[in-house]
Image 1: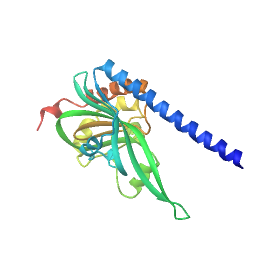
Image 2: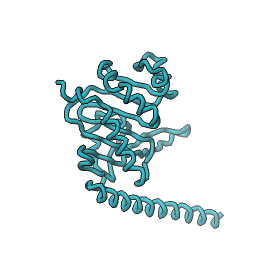
Image 3: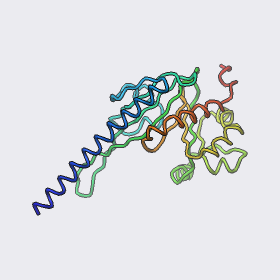
Image 4: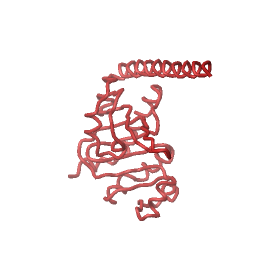
Amino acid sequence: MAVLTLLFAALVAAGIIYGLLAAKRRREELAALAARLGLEFSPSADADLARQYGFLNHLARGDNRYAFNVLSGRYRQHEVRVFDFHYETHSTDSKGHSHTHHHYFSFFLLLLPRDFPELRITREGLLSKLTQALGFDDIDFESAEFSRAFCVRSKDKRFAYDVCNPQMMEYLLANRDLSIEIERDALALAFDRRLTAAEIEPNLDRLLAVRAHVPEYLFASH
């Protein structure tokens, strides 16, 4: 029994050390990427950034919310923020014991020159179909393929139709893993995991591609 306990403790210690080394290596890779792209890099936890953009759905979950490993600055003439995000949820098991669950994912922000109403474009899935059954309808489009692939929600349908124009729909159908939110002065991409350093730049380019498909007349009107 003592041997098993020592073995378990050794495995736990090895896991912790591996995790710390992996986190250090990732910070170094992100710092090098930021330097190459001309962006600033801050590994520190940033609760202020989480609060500043807490109106975005993905950044309003759980508690103890903070951004970290933040890349920020101008990228191809656009002001951007890319960061890891943490939040906590809590549960109670059948024995009454409380458990804290830590969640992490990558988030991309592009700052827009004017404010817009909320618009969410997410992959169609079981959850979105359940909410539709409860009366939370999404917006349908002439493209049946796009309507099957994505759930689009906004109180401003005209804005949703303007953004989800044929070119945008074609782009999103070729990039079906994207989850997009526009609200106020933010255009955001959310992922369900922390991306590797090598995945950051290609997804920054996809963020800019989404921005490029938003019609320019929307920025000219007030």
